[in-house]
Image (tube, rainbow, N blue to C red; front, side, top):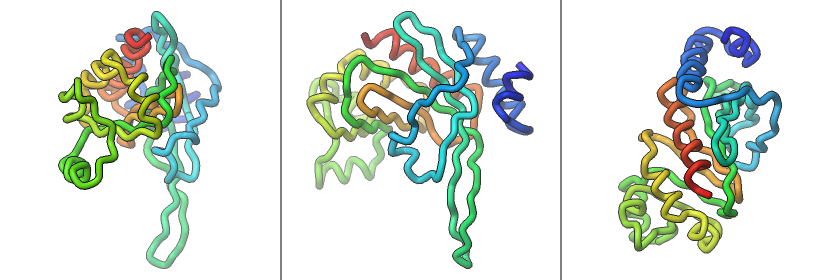
Length: 207
């Protein structure tokens, strides 16, 4: 455990949190440290406001069909102060989960739908709704670049897995075959477990 924390480059108070996260994941899943993998996070729009994003540590979740991944990232943000001084700041470590999908979804963004989203949708419909799955469409806001690809990929099995996510605040982005899910909050064992459950079930359920 200590070597994993040291290799991740985490320092107090992050070390205690990271240790709890790893213990929770190892208790529920079969995970293996990956070593260096380029997950091409720059392709995701959710990271577009960062100067840089680096994966400090990554773990493969061993599933029946194919592996999914837990990523622990550090991001660099640029801020302009009152005197127009530019400063680079580092965000707290974030937790993201990543999975590779069989279907090409195009580009997709999914998050929980807000009242503002519902009002905008009445005026200018932009999201993809599923007439046969009102519960999903009422719960989630789904923006797509290619409606046919998204409809084919987001079948009933996929939507059921998304509906069962046990997190209130998250965003899912899909770029073709690659899905990432998480939020910008600091790492926690509970959040990491919920994210791992989602991508593991996705890889097991959605053939």
